[in-house]
Image 1 (cartoon, helix red, strand yellow):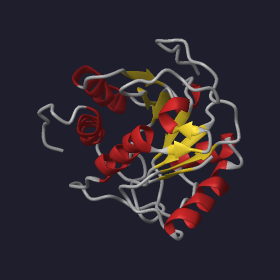
Image 2 (cartoon, helix red, strand yellow):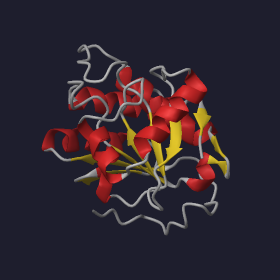
Image 3 (tube, rainbow, N blue to C red):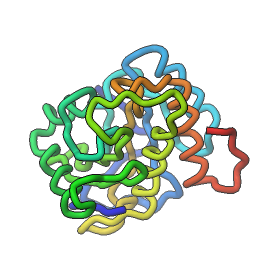
Image 4 (cartoon, helix red, strand yellow):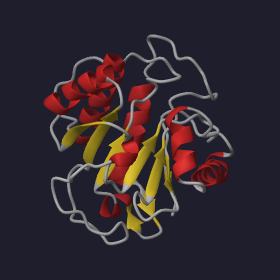
Amino acid sequence: MTAEPGTHTGHDDVGSSFAPLPDRPTPELVLCAVDDLLAQAWTTVADTVDGRVFVHRGSVLDVVAQAVVSPANSYGWMRGGIDAVYARAYPDVEQNVRSAVLAYHGGELPIGEAVIVPTGESEPAWLISAPTMREPGERLPRDTVHPYLAARAVFQQWRDGRLDQGRVRDHVHTIAMPGLGTGVGGVAPASCARQVAAAWDEVFTPDRPRNGR
């Protein structure tokens, strides 16, 4: 993987996006939902995984975070769903994603990989693009594991990724994550939540027994 340069009240004081933050074993993850079904599903993740995982009932844009997650397509187009919301809020971000996908992945970011790019804003300073579908607007099958693969890529990017300024984990304390594939992709909220929890356990608590994805 590669890296390029409302209101959630954090549970710790958060420093500048450009100043290294205290080294931590996991990020703070804020799971965002604008509907009740996803909010309820996200609660099961917060209740079962080990780490600083919280639920925000509202827009991902209302969360105070250094990075937001884009459940993208493999080509970096940001024209629908939450990606369109990001593109309106951060006018440079779609071009930044597409440039990173072209430079590091030949124009197509495989599902299971992620890139981190600047938003052009001071906060959140970064967007982590992790595709849940290859083509824009793709309807995912019921047995898809793409939310798991996308979430795992996000968590691995935080753990292992690097920016021009240093390690991703030194500059990103809080990650705001919307549903992965639960909009246009049609993934059931409960399935998405199980897969995100499984990805978290695999990356951050690999010795913990896990339920099936």
